[in-house]
Image (cartoon, rainbow, N blue to C red; front, side, top):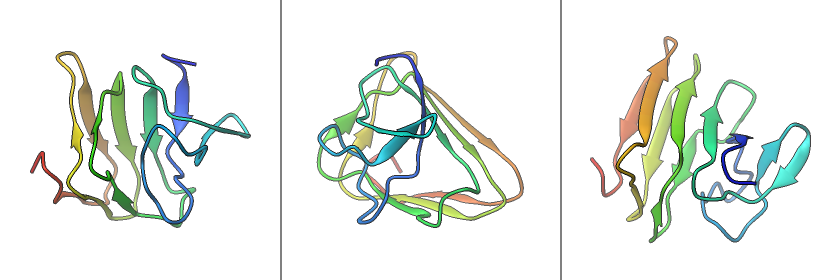
Length: 99
């Protein structure tokens, strides 16, 4: 599924990883794959996202929300061409290894 839009719901325990189908592609649960475009928006009640202890290589990460989000954990968002876009009035706090 690499390159497809993944809605970053990351259902409890809100861990963003490559082994749990805790995101959505359309309305279907999906695994995150490196290269995916990830969107965090107001449809999720899980606004603290644990990056675990690994590195993630999304195509892009967009946080488009009125809610406040926190990216935490010892994991990293990596990639030579990965973009991080913050849009909307909510804040984004990076307290993971990238911060």
